[in-house]
Image: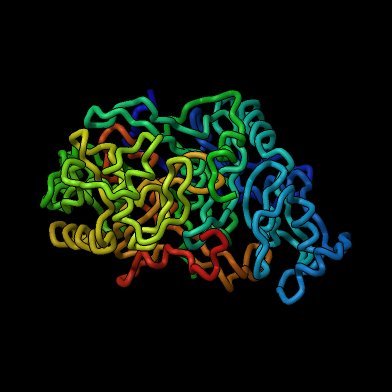
Length: 256
Length: 256
């Protein structure tokens, strides 16, 4: 059985997070910020944390001056805006190039995500020449934050690490989940009956991505709201959650 | 300037909608259902309506017994679960086949959406042999609902028609926007500065899809909640909104 439909879900942005430094304890920072705002984290909250602060806390940043571009990175970058050293970092973060055209690199990361520039990004990073990489293991990042909240407050939450990905066919980007802890990221209706008693054969929803998208509405890109609580959503708990469930089986993907 | 980040956004499912019939006035039905639930629709609410009830109200349903499959539809269906008449309807709703493999048809609809089976669907439709098609003009559908709410309650809202689409690379489906009224579906940060004073060059978010995804969390597939209000999200009003803005420029799409 899927969870009952709630009467109301709340999306609550946590403001007042400090600039995150390598080695920072994110759980401690977000628990404090929520308390300072008068928003106690409650059992069952889904805590959505944007990738950027996770990567910063984990030291997943690279300074361009420390990078020597390969001949391939230099060739690819010719005639485009991207610095060849930036391109070099994108290539290093990729295990497979899916498309490369007109200055755009769509690649598969070591985690299995297919996205632009292997998730390497220069926005919201201090220093004009600093790049931010995806966390090495976003599920582990989510678990650490979840455990930190549990230890400090004694409440069991779900944690989602989100990032902003573009997609084929549709304009613009949306936030999606790249790491999960404590929540089954998928919700299957297969075998259940619809309102007309007809058995559903195929519907599986990626609720982790829907939660990440919902959180983005209260996060914004420029105002420094890297943590959002979603309260009142009856997620399916899972202690073995993994971003692997978010990856489409290559055998069922016609666009790889 | 993008809108200020709100302190809290609420996602409110509207229960108690009756089974929708062809010719029904959806605005009247959803205004009544909200009132019966004690949830007055307020100015600035984003009203997210699932495609299925819109299509039913507009008579966009087809009975299989009225369809004669073409030889192509029969050939495509061999060895797969889909009825050749169902396949025939999918082909008629498509202006272009993007991929066709292993029983899966990914096509471009006349609106320009690229999705499985041209959006033709048999779930949540009364009668084992009835298919539901996408609305002919989902923006017009959204405008009619918006005007109906305005006329009945005197409140200005935004309306999004949503549907459940799969996507490449990522498992499962999420709800996205297929029609919009009164809201700019895109939010651009291009030219703005991030928290470190760095100018953002590329970030455009598809907030209409994020709102549709958020609404799905309170809608569910099997419990008959086809209308969801999102309250407290400071959207950019637009009187000329169109789903065209949701379609990626073919020249910038590497996966068509």
